[in-house]
Length: 214
Image 1 (cartoon, rainbow, N blue to C red):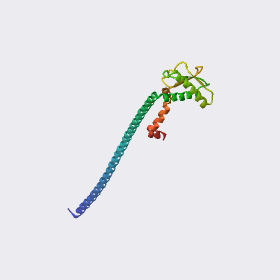
Image 2: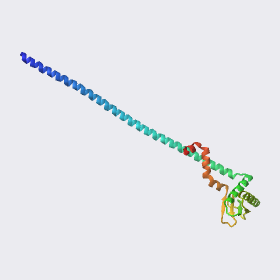
Image 3: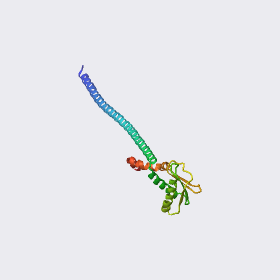
Image 4: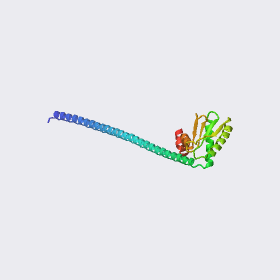
């Protein structure tokens, strides 16, 4: 090979080596950039998957907690209802087992309460068939006296000719029969129970009443 040819060969070879080095370095840079991009993409995907998993876990946990709270609330309300029913039955039993003195005082008070809501002052008092006629007359006289003193109006109550059809308590009606108030123990309990059960619930489960108030 002649000297000029050798120089030309060396120049071509040097140029080829330079281009090869450049290509190699460019390839290494591109490979590094690709690896970095791939790593970033992979991390982004991992972060997205983890975020979705956390969101789903939070949702499920919230649903579970809500279900548990609803179930606990239902059990508390069931317990409250059961307790209130027991209270109601206890009150009914207690009313049915009043001794004669308690029953008479309750009848007088219920009668005066009825008289206060009756028009006029000529009234008839009826007691259950289990009461004796003398009891009716005596109770009517006491009702007249108490009503006149408490209501500040003249009241004349007399014994009815026939017993009341209620099992307990007292029935007050106007002399003309147009107005009648039934104040039996059981009937009065039934009428007052919605109000009484609220008071009983507040005593039995005060935390539920406070929560409702908030």
